[in-house]
Length: 132
Length: 198
Image (tube, rainbow over the protein chains, first blue to last red):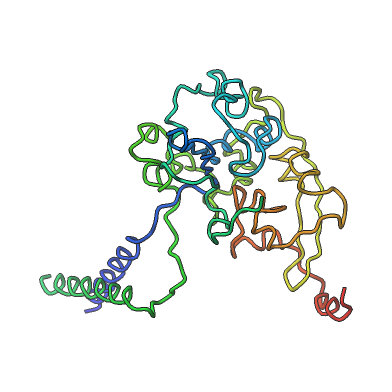
C-alpha cells in the first residue's frame, strides 16, 4: 500500500511537472544582446551577440575599453561597413583573431523583428523603456 | 500491477483536469508568479535565435561551454569571478596578445545605505580583474567619496551599477542582494539615523 501511494504520488508530481513545463517560454542566455538597429530594414535577421561565449575568452575591458564598445544594447551604431574597416566586431572577426565576416548567418541568427535588447534585463521584465 | 497503472492513470487525468480547471479560473494559485524558463537551452530552442537559420545550428550550446565552470544560482548560472579565480577559464586581457595581465586594485569602498539593509561594500579587486578604470571612471562613477548619487531604482533602470548588473554581470534578484549589501550595520545605527534625521 505504501509503495502504491508512493507511486501514485510520483505520478501526480510527474504529471503536474509536465503540465507546468508546457506553458514555459524559452529564454535566451542571460546577457545575450540582440542588435537590430538596421537589420530588419535591410531584410537581414538581427545579430545576436553571445556575451557568455566572449567573456569566457576575453575580459570585459578588451571590447568595452580597448575596442570602444559603449555599454548598452544598440548604443554602438555598428554597421557592416565599420566592421569591414576593422571597427567593433571587425577588430577580431577579420580572419586573424577570429573567423571572418563571410559567415553572415552565424551572427545574423535572431528571429526577424526581435527588438534591440539585452536578455534578462529588469527593464525588459517590467516593460519599462530604457532611459535615453 | 493492473490496479497500479489504473491508479496512476486516474491520478494523471485528475492532475491534468485540476490544472486545466485552475487555468480557466480567475483565482489561480500564484497568479503573478511567472514560472522560470529553463536556462542554457541550445540556440535553436532559446526563443531568440531563428531555428530556420542554418548558422544557428553552428553555434555552441551554452551548456557545453559551461561544463566544469563554477555554478551560481543566478544569471546564466555561472559564477564568473570564481571560475576565473579557480582557473576554470582564463580570459585574455588583450585581443591579440595572451601575455598582458590586468592590474588589480585592492580597494574596498563602503557605502552607508539608508534603511535597514546592510551597507554596501564595493570591491575594486574583482572589478579591475575584468575592467579598465576608464570603463567606470568618470563616465559612470566620479572617483570621489559622496560624489555619486545612486539608488536601487536607478540601478534597476540600468544606471550606475545597473549598467552591467542586470545586463551581463550578476543580476539583481532577491538571492543576490547580499552580494553587495554585505556589511552589517553597527547596532541601532538605523534607529539613530532616523532619530537624527541624517
